[in-house]
Image 1 (cartoon, rainbow, N blue to C red):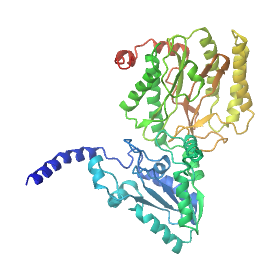
Image 2: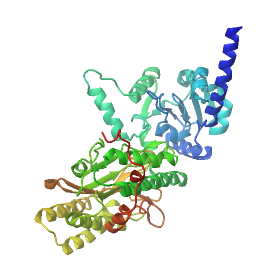
Image 3: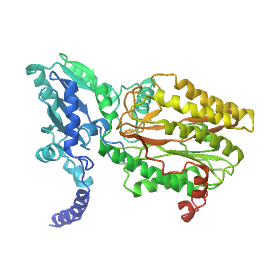
Length: 488
């Protein structure tokens, strides 16, 4: 009887926890309706043709106490945020079949509700997919296609899945590091999946789905742009708070923590990338991210950081004087850089190529160069080299202005074509004076529209007077100083 009573009391204790966990249950996105995913899948069916199908692999369960985040590629085609899911897209029947793990009641009692194969009818209603099965049925269904189907081509992704704070360039680097490690040498998860498809479907040709998805992701829908703008707004607010909070003897990581507070307080689900908060000589390393240095009077600070908002990213950078006042050499070099930077922003327009845009910008850069008096030959040399780099790029028919931004910070898609409405990207040219370890870079997020180019991040001060004015205001780090622990 005592044991029964204890079990009953334990059940009463667990039930509220389960109810609370279910309140935040959202295994299917609320940012897009199922109709938008259906439109994306329809374009994939068009690209596959009637004699092919595709299998898209979702992200696995995360390691450690880390929240699950779906691969960008899987999320893009169905919006389902469940680990170890698969989606079969049939170009012939133009249908989508979702494969989910079976219910793990113990895990749900601990962590909350999660979509499973047992929720098939609810999943179909919410997502708009045509059918839902357990993951164990995927192999059988693929086998049926070998015997009965006319399709003999299967598409899947040959490139690594983009997870939390991940772009394809770094995902490829991670795979290469593992593969080249003589004491590891594992092939990547996507390579293993391709290998299994070829072994289990020997009659099929396995092709790469990546180019099809990349081309679709290149043009953003209005809902996608809304999320990118929200991420940009949060990134800009954190940068502005960073300007207020920056003072000599502040640690770089303090600004990192302040920015994360702004992000998560306002609904971000993570970081778009690790913070690049680099003071003084650290800024000469474009992806410096250790964040441990104490900022010193007289230095410049580079602040490059943005959030992941609804699985969409931003990328914004500003520079500021640590003491709140640009000195003579900083005004000289930063002022010249901003003039050139604005020339590029001014020239961006829809239906123009990167080459044409840079050709217009270089004309203004040359005029600025001719009108500028430099305090020393070293600075003039660096600024002339900066302009010459743009002149050289303006002679390249495939020139790009920067990198795409979307579900990844360095988003996917081909370069070299004209800039079309719906494209989203940043520019981030860098001026270097290596002899004095000086590095200056700004970055803004740009959306191409039918009428022009919207500089979404232009509310963040870029001009020296605006930066200095903002830096005179009290910052969050001054209102809430670090504890004695942080002083040691």
